[in-house]
Each structure stands twice: as structure tokens, then as C-alpha cells.
Length: 433
Image 1 (tube, rainbow, N blue to C red):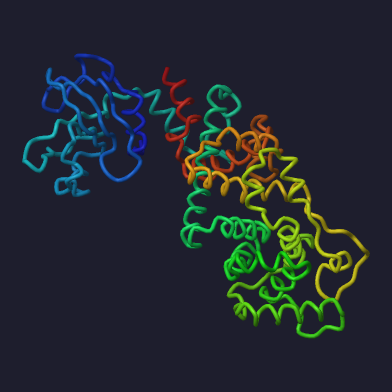
Image 2: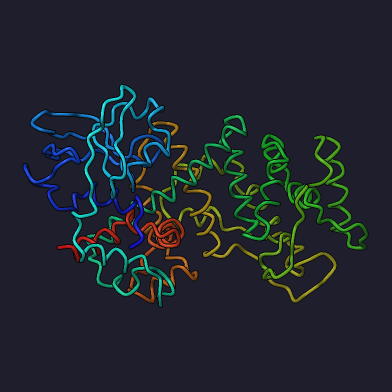
């Protein structure tokens, strides 16, 4: 069968092989008796696979690292013999032993083989788990409904925080790029979300091209921030007969000269295949309205922990011109274009919560429970990934769950990382036992 190191890591981490818990039936290739006291901490980064293991080898207690390979010769293939990071390896665990391995002092490294110590039932379960065959969505789709809530719920919460951590890292990078200006970071993150998937890059570039000190000044003068954003985005028309648009162009040119704003963006704004309410013209107007309504938006966002209060803060509408327009020059029946509750929830999930978590960490505060409180008030998102899991079992609870399912699908299921997943481990353990 096809073997990989992930499975060997699983076998060692959970001691799922013959002799693993015995005091006298596990031997090295040289005949030394091995007793596993602690398998060590699984290392997902560079260096030995397990840190701080404790073993007794022929009666001698050892503390150090464990390295795992498919074949013993992989030690040399990976040049570990010349790497100081591997100088404290006390045991080499392999599927097959095809050569003797020595450390930098030319001493043999104790080695155990697993090939003949793993039951056929566990091997078959592992093979079946990773074999796609007729499966269309995830590897464990035929068993997913049977996973105990006591396994699934804590795992989804952990996976959600993995996803949040990825976003927090992005925030921290942006904070450094923006010279520690938290208000600017929030503005950039919100702008990107206002751009939706199609115009995210263009909206982020737009936000980065205006120092937040200027945004703050413009937002205190009603009606001035919107034409500046529209102008920098390249959306104001060259020719127009509409008085409101003529005034906007004049306001933009005045602000561009006064604040030495850039001429144009590298990214173009797109309209194609977008629903009219997601047109960049409408979203830019709503973004400008948000900052005119709440010049101190960052401070307010960092202190509110109820979804409804945040919705009240973010409930804004595009300016009056857009009541009868989606694009310049084309009139339609009057309709007020407010931010919908669903869109506000997207802003909270993708922009506000990551910034707030990063800000709290920066100040040494723990606010996980507060964030979970907000997330559990937000309905679960509706997308193909969530729907795919919903077809297997009922999970439709809240935004924490839907975000966790997105992370699970993209970073575990799609990458065949079943052995790093509590669901996959649960299935293998159940079948093994």
C-alpha cells in the first residue's frame, strides 16, 4: 500500500502500533528493548518531528527528540547527519529499515521499524479514508454524520481560531506596513470587504493610497469624502451634465491638489457579473457614509460586543444621488441603498473581528469569549462549502461554525490532511479499536 510520513506521525503520536504500550516487546533493529514513556510533542515546523520525548532504551532513561521517516536512508537524503538541529535525536522511527544511521559523532542512532507492527484493519481503514473513489465532497463523507458532537464541536471551535489566527497575522503585517496606525488598518480591512471578492484588491489599494489623517479630515466635512474616493477610484465620468456630479468633480480636483493625492490606481474597478448593489460606485458611497457617520469608528468598534449595537453603528446608506442610480448617468426608479444586515455581518466576520482580536492581543487582553459571543449572534453563512457539510449532517448554527467549516474544507479536507483532523483521528481510532 502507499505509505506516507503523516500516517507514521499518527501511529507514533497516538501509539497505534504493536508494542507501543508494552514494557518489554518493542525492540530496536539492534535488539535493544524500548519503553515509550512520552512520545513527545508533535512538531509541525522545521526540525525533528517530535520534541522532548522520554524513552527507556535497554534500561537507560533518555530524553530528547524523535525523527520519523519512511526509510532509514531518508536520514541521509535529508542531510540530517550534518544538521545540528538533529543532534539530540534519541530514536529513529521508520516504516522500513534499509540502512544503518549514525549521528555526527558517528554513533548509531537507535531505530525501530513499524512495518510489521501495524494491524491490517487499521491500514485498510487509513487507505479507505484517503481513497477518493466515489466520494464527491470530503474523504469521510459516508461517516461524517456519525461523528460524536463531543469530538466535532471542540474541533470546529479550534479550527475557527486557526482561521481567525490567519487573518490576525494579515492584520499584524498591515499594522507594520501602516506604521502602527490601528485606525488606518481598520479602514483598509473594511475597504477590502466593501470591494467584495471582485474588487477587493482595488478597494484595498484605494484605502492605502489615502493617509488616514486625510480620511479623518474629509469625513468631518459632509459630502466631501465620497467624491474623493470615487475620483481616486477612477469612477467619476469625464463628461457629465448632472450638477451633482459636476460638483463632485470639482471637490475631487480641489482635494487632490490640496492633499497631493495620487493620480490613479493600478487596479481597475470592475462591474461585470456583479449584482448592482455590489457595484463599486454604491459600495464606495456607503463606505464614505460610514466614516461620515462615525469619524471615531475604530474606538466605537473596539468597545461594542453585541451584534445589534454593531449593526446600528454600521447601518448606513449610499448618498441621495444613488437613490436613482447604480452607475453615472443611468437613472432608475428611486430606491434607498442601505447596507443589508447580511453584508454588515460579512464586515464583522472578515474585518472587524480580526482587527479587534489583533488589537486586544497587542494590549495583552484576552477577549476570545467576547468574540465568540458576537459570532454566535451572527447566523451561519450560506455558501457551497457550508451547504456541502449541511448535506451530510445538521450543523447550521452560527458564523463561528460556518467559518470553521470553510477552514476545515480548504485546509484539511481538500489537502487530504485527515490525520491532522480530529474527525479523521476519531474514525481511525474507532475502527482500530
